[in-house]
Amino acid sequence: MKSNISENIRFYRKEKNLTQEQLAEAMGVSVGAVSKWEGGISVPELSLIMELSDFFGISVDALLGYKMRDNTAAETAERLRIMRSQKDYTNAFSEVEKAVQKFPNNFDVIYQGGGLLYFLGLEKDDRKVVLKSKELLEHALNLIDQPHAHNVGKSDIYDDLSGICFILDECEKGLDMLKEHNEGGVFDAEIGYELASSFKRYKEALPYLSDALVRNLTDLFKCIIGFANVYENRREFEKAFDAVKICYEINEMFRVPGTVSYLDKGSIVLLTACAQICEKLGDEAGIRKYLLEAKSVAENFDANPDDSAKNVKFYEKDIPASAADDFGETAIATIENVIAWEKEKYPKTCKIWQEIKEI
Image 1: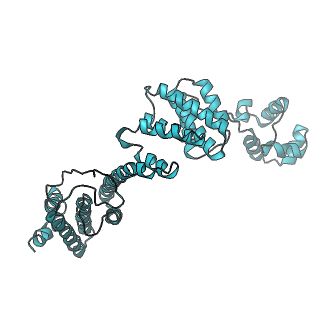
Image 2 (image 1 turned 60 degrees about the vertical axis):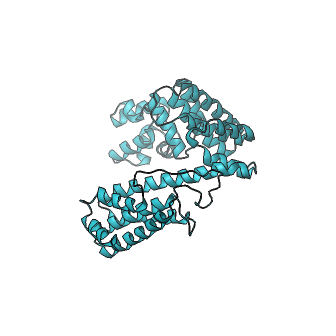
Image 3 (image 1 turned 90 degrees about the horizontal axis):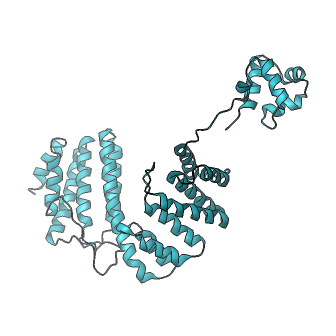
């Protein structure tokens, strides 16, 4: 609950065309007192608030200008979430305590409160705050089956709890927690990082780091193609081209020269996409250039196909992962299919490809 009395005294004084000196004289107080009221340094006594209301011809409520906060569980949790995202630690501990006292078994409130205190304790190196965060996050695990506002899963909570273990110098416990709850490899990168950085167990780290690398490259590919589709739909073709080209360059950085791997298929798709976007940009030379590059990569791959990750830079795993896709059985078929799927949208790309594939 917030009062706007200082702003209101200033507003109504000016509305009556009074100086601070004139209002002070009318109220029988010093000019300094009025100045402090309007500056929010002090608040008039109750009797003076009633006199001011009468003087301005308004109700006491209007003068006080109280604004009641929406204190539902949902709004309380959202305030805590915003405080965490903006790193607003003003009265964070007391805000969380009040919220938890009011909604002791509401998942959103407990989780957001625990998350806020986790950030606060981490950045301020405050063990008391960290321990309170741990208590709340562990409680949130018991409440997670409740419907909740954001896409929060157990992995999000275990991620924070493992971080708390490392803060509290319970590193082995934190690592075990990550391993135990590593469904779908969600913590591969973090486990690999901790093994290599905190524990110096380098050999053990490699499989986790390798799987995380492949997964993140695949996710990047999907993410960028998604962005490109959004930008094309908005007719922001330059941005679409930049997104695809940057992804292609990153993809190329992880290809080992002179070898083939599953990354080649990604490069072929990205090069073909560059050609298609060039059509929207009116760049016929660009269409031809990128289709020729795609054809060259495809022919090299098809001469000695390998859909595994063994030739991806930094990948070190005894049994390399293999990738499957629905672009086509061969690399050349991948180009054919990507073009055919949208031939009405990119007719010039389709025509130029028919010329190039005969070369």
